[in-house]
Image 1: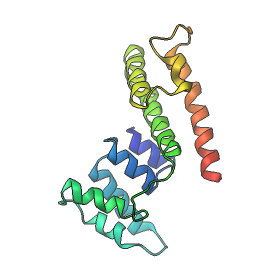
Image 2: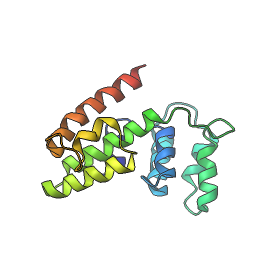
Image 3: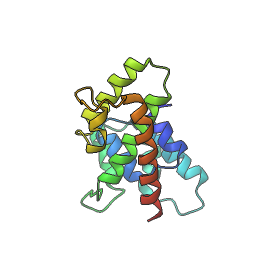
Length: 158
């Protein structure tokens, strides 16, 4: 599964998470439009205009589409604290790697890519190819995924 599919399956998606993913190139316009369509089709709440606009935004320029996402938030486009959003994406990327059919060697390389992409988080230091910890990156990532999942669940409940 892709990181987007993992976030969706785990019910870890929201507009803030999608927007940071779009801004960083981790999910695309089509995924966001499909998510908006599901919101419109399955919501029993009042649907706001930005969501309806996103459903019809297939042919918008990248700038206009980005502004639509920004309109989902405060007038400043403030996403708030990015840490929980980045945690969700990192969890999804790592789980996607572990669930993949890639070789153990390739998984280690992909884990290293995630380590770099997320600015070398401390909880991944022992998983790096440059670490002398002796921790197997793939096995250590499985443990880390469980910890990240628990952090996300705790953050959602708060």
